[in-house]
Every structure is written in structure tokens, then in C-alpha cells.
Length: 492
Image (tube, rainbow, N blue to C red):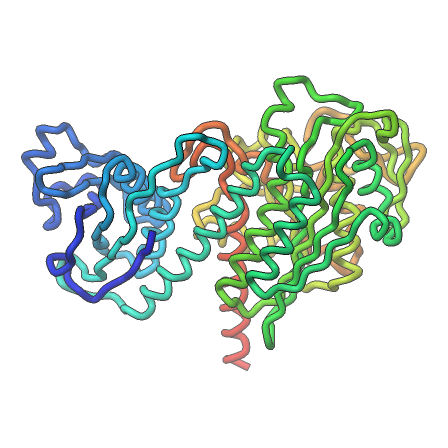
């Protein structure tokens, strides 16, 4: 589906169907030309409510407001409805009111998301009849917004949305087909396509790097582990950022075996790694002026005679020892070594990790919200602000000294699981804190995406399954800190 912005007026655009967005149930708007028919059809213009009038070739969709996320959701609903038809070309315009050209970006993202469906394993493939969408940039009062700016927003929105869908596809892949080796091959293919540097470490290289925690998790799997290091290096970057992703391509819980019902959807335990790959795709497609390193720890957590065990004591890359009391707290072990690797090899200005780390975070914040943790209040606020602007939900969970005591070990430097059932999302992050060097404490953010990464029912413009959590908010944050850096340069 190609999305383009045009200087033509609505009436000058030729298309099979027109999408009319009804904002705040304003049925008196100049663009609502079928009021009586809509009334008879019972259309009230509620959020994501659609009404397709075949006789006038118009599809009406409701949006509660001109806020970006409402617009994004409405246009996703409109495209989903039109996918059931044979419509090939669509035109639409933007109800501007007091909003800016940014709403055009939300429209474009919503339409790409509305056209998404994971059907790789279905005999009957999804229909994608719409080939072209044309957006006119006129206001209903005849005013115009900056065309070139709006055009740039559309182009960037499509790239970020496709990177999000790329992430969704990777997360949705089943564990038999998306092994650690296959995830590494996907990263190599992405590097070749997008001009990225790519290094893949096998189990021998991981041994040479003294990654004892990472290797222990992988021990009982038939599929060997891989550390993936992608790098995007533009000229004169404003910052250097390292992204670390948890890549458990499948998690059985190990010897601390999960109940059967909790093993279903564990293909999603690689969502942090997939988000990192999606971000690397987006940042290179957009050509952002930030050097970005994506580091992924890919492995399986399985059972077998050589599986790591409760009571084992492991040594991580930084030399710290870890008492194992639960083998289902494995993602933090992989992240520990990968965080050490990122600090040693990259030396970033900012360090972020992405992980479906704890069910406790889902209990605390719900299925749709990412937990944000770290030491620096300004950094957490900056990232959460960007997430809100991108349409992703975040909640901040605070560190405290009392919870830190719960991961104390009597036989090693730290225990891999808390001695209490409470505050599990925070104690998991505090475990990772043991592997953050002092100079990076204020530059590190931990993002627990266990809630939004994979939900088994549709929500908003997200389908059932993977949502691509983490991609849009991180790109928005990159753009935000790049703008702030440019302003400082101009003032100096």
C-alpha cells in the first residue's frame, strides 16, 4: 500500500472510496455529506466506529478527538474495514481544527497498521486490496499546512510503521522456525539490506567473552546461542546509544518448569530482541543522526540432563557471581552479560534494555503498558514523554533500598530472584543494576515490555499477537534528543 500526500483538493482526487473521519461526533462538519443516511444506519461517530456507504463510495470512521492516538486508531479501523472489499484506491483528508501537520503522520501510521495481518502459516492469505492512498492536505476551511513538512511526516511515519510490523512478524514467528541461529540470520539480512555493521558471536566466542550467565541458560537447548551486534554509524552523530534486547526464542522455564498454560505464547519472550532489530531498521531507514548499536542475546531456555539448576552459582562477564534459585528467571541472566558487553565494547552515551522480563510488571501496570525503570529521573521523564507522543503507554516504577535487599545472596554476590513475591518487576531491574557500571548508572533505562509486547486479543490499532512494542517510542525519543542537541548547538 502506497501512501502519498498531494496538493490537490479532495474533489480533484480520483479514487474508488473516500475516507471521512468524523471527529468528536461532529456530524455537522462540512465533509459529512451523508447525514441522513448515516442517521438511518445508526452511525454515531464513536471511536473506531465505521460505516461504509457503497452508494456514495464513502467510508465514515469516528475519532473521539484530534489527538494523535485517536486519529491513528480511527484510520487503522477504516483500512481494516476496507480490506473486506475490492477497493484499490482511497482518498482522504485531515480534519485539522487546531491540530498540526503531525496528525498526518498519525493517519499514515494508522493506515499501515490497519493493513497488517500475520498470515504466514495460514492456507488462506489475508486480503490487501488497497494499493494507493492519497491524502489531501487542505483544511476544511480551505487553509493549508506546510506541505513539505507534512510530506516528510508521512514518509517517516510509513518507515516507522513498517519497522514496527517487521518487529511484529519476528515476534509472531514460532520457536521451531525462529531459533537463535535463525534470528541471527535475520539480523545479517537486515544489515545487508540497510547498510549496517553486523557481528554474530557463537558459543565459542561467548566463552571467550566470559559470558557464563548467558551460556548457562542455553546449555540444555539443541539450538546454540548467538549474540548479535548490529551497528548504525552515520557521519557526525549527536549521540551514541546502545540497545540491548532479551532474545529468548523460547522459554520453557528450564528445570523450574512453567505450567502448561504459561508455556503458550512463550515465542514472545524474544520481543525485546525483535524490538531492537526493528529499531535498527527504523533508525537506518530514517537516516537519524545518532550512532546506534543493537545488541541481542538470543537463546532458548530448555530442560535436559545438562540444564543449569537451582543452587548453581554462575559467573557473569563482569566477574560477579549469581546464585540461581529459579531457572525461570533466565532473561535477566542473558541481559546481565549483554549489558556488560555493551558497556565494554560500545561505551555509549545512553544504554537501554528491552525485555519481556516479568509477569510482575503486567500485574503492576496491565497488559498494555511498558514499565520504565532507572536511576535518573530526567531520563525516565524524557523517555516517557516521547512514548506518550508516539502513542505507547508507559508507567514508571521506582527503585528503593528495601527491595534491593531482597536479592541478597548468602553464597554469591547476588541472587537471580527475590526472596519475596512482591515488587518482582523492580527487583528484576535491581538485579540488572548489579551489571551496570557506576559511570553508566544515570544513563541507563530498563524497559519491561512484558505487558504490551504480545496480547492475545486485538487492542486499538494493534492486532492479536505481537504489537511491536518499543519501536515507535524509541524512535520518537531519538528524534527528541536529536532536536534538543541541535538547539543547544545553535545557541552555543
